[in-house]
Image 1 (cartoon, rainbow, N blue to C red):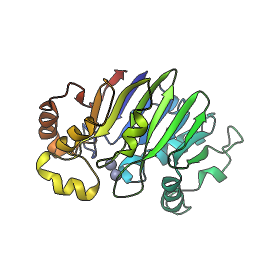
Image 2: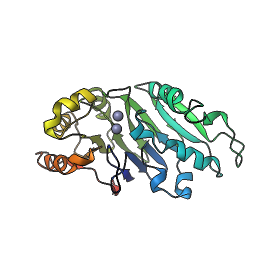
Image 3: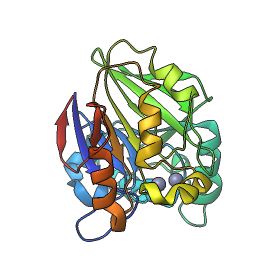
Length: 254
Ligand SMILES: [Zn+2]
Ligand SMILES: [Zn+2]
C-alpha cells in the first residue's frame, strides 16, 4: 500500500505539518493536514477519515475537507472514530456553533449529506467497502483510539498520540499481514516527565514499545514537536533496533 505522509509533526510552521496520513489516495488517518496539501479533486477522492482523537492538531483540516466536498459531486465522507471521540467531535466541533452538524445538511450537488458519522465501540472493528478499521484505545490525555487499517490483504497500524500501551500492541500482533506501524515520539528523552503527564512517548519510551511488537516491519516515530526535531531524530537513530524509523513527510510504499 502507498502511505502518503501529509504531516508528521505535533506542531506546524512553514515547512512542517500537523498529523495527516493518506493511504492509497482514499483512506485518511487524522486530519491535521489534509486540505492544505491536497487539490479539490484529491479531496473528493477520499472515502473515509479515521480520527484518533479530538485534539485540534488532529482535526484542523476536517471541517474544511467537508466544506470543500459539500460543493462537489462527492459521495458522503465517512468519518470514523471511537464512540468517545465521536461524542467530542459532535459536542465541541460540529455543534452548530463552531461548525454546523454537516450530517444534517443536504449537499446541493448530490442531494445527500456530505458526511456520515461511523462511531465504533472501542475494541471493535468496522468494515466500509473493502476496508476494515479495527479501533483500539490508547493512553493519551483525552479519550483516544488508534486504528489498524486492513485493505487489499495488508494491514497498517496507527496509534495516534499515546503514552505507553499494551492493549494496542496485543491487538496489532494478531495481524499476520501487518506491513508497518506509525506511532509517535513527541518529546526528546530529557522531557520524560512532560511526556508522561501529557500522554506521549519519548525515543526511550518508543524503544520500550518496540519490544512489545512481534513483527519485523518498520516502526515509525511521528508527531515530533518541531523545536526538538533534530534531537528526537538522533535519539531514534541511536536505538539498536533496525525497525526503528523516523517518519518524514513523503510517500512510502509499505
Ligand atoms: Zn497531537
Ligand atoms: Zn493529542
